[in-house]
Image: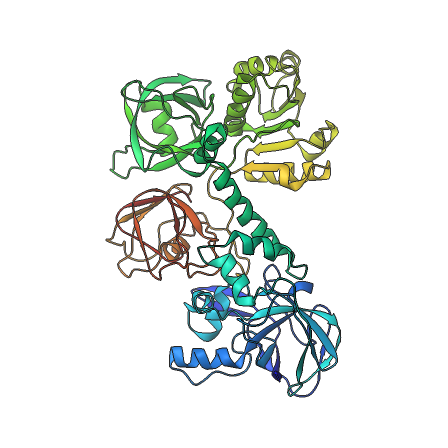
Length: 586
């Protein structure tokens, strides 16, 4: 008969880690006597990161003494204590390869239902001092599992564990864990998992996405749909290739458009409206800065156009705006980006500010090229007509669309300029946007400064537009995902501290940082951390794929080897080491 060996609780605390501070509840300790289990927690317990732990679906974490013995042998240790793996209940029995999601158990006065495996997270490795443990938990099929509380009550070490129900589908915790984190997924098992009512909503959502990807891959064998799918997932060429500068046009005093063509005169591969190009530019000091710019023209014109704002003291924008001439060649990576116009029949809402007009202008080109019958709105903000590039082009495209609306806002225009442009005085604010009465069933695309996009996203949500149909494109690095780290002042990306490295050149394209790989090694993620380049990660051991990042050029090696390799053209920066000079889209 399975039994409860220990009840473990602990409140979150701040722990130093790699020069940072982690707020975590992974430190659990045994309690003596009865403990009260409630719907969301055990009395005296808490979680530091409620995005991945705690809540109704993850109220109690279970780990087995059999797995303790396994890890003692694996690591050659004998110092483990109950609660060491962050679990609330240490049990004798209930192995991960026998317990099924949906199984129910009575322990003492309380009853529980198994909802999901443990979330793979670096903090369990932090607690044990074994950084690779998150990957090993999955690879060795010993994750542990969460339960929700069906009936509250007291439990105590020594209580028997009585099975009161069996989950449908007979998918064990180890099966479910492998479906999410390991390669070679069985689509039949994915469908079976989605029919388990007890499976937590987060894991159901992940499995729906995996199943949709698998089915889309099977359906995208031929035809235009297949071409669009391949275009979205695979860049038209690897690394950088030379493109000829066909034309350089000053759109106004601060914005310059550059048209790029194939040196042999052939048509360049079609892009998707909203994507961007990454350029490696010559520099007098030999540094070859890398920058990304949105396409601003029709995505299938046979050539590519970018429109660049000359930033004060901007090395790259200064070169492109004042030094570049037609006939020159630039090193260019293939069009990339997921901020793209999607197919459909509902209204399209384009919202932009400043140079943020470039990707939505490309979308407008695509809509006009197919003579779209969709309702199209464009809301744009600029300082004045003098600082509103490509305005005549946008007007002509909107006029070609039978159901288009345009709303222009100028924050520093004269009364005469406002009248001539039929523009509204002031900035595009949340209040102004809501007052336009935009259609609630629209799909929205927003581009501009980060604060502008945050305000517009909130405004559109308040206007009734579903969050899943609101898309944003950031200039610069993507927002970081660093679970458990305490808030600290934002620091612009910079060169790493200490003596310069002598290894391969690592370039973080969106952040504008190029630096030599340090002599002491470490992962690319650790180098990004040292440079304060915003990064996305969770497990830090090659399991969860949160850190997957486009690799524009170069090769990497892995240590440790990820449990499932990333798609071609992408890398897992948490365990990647450069195999030579590399450029990353981050």
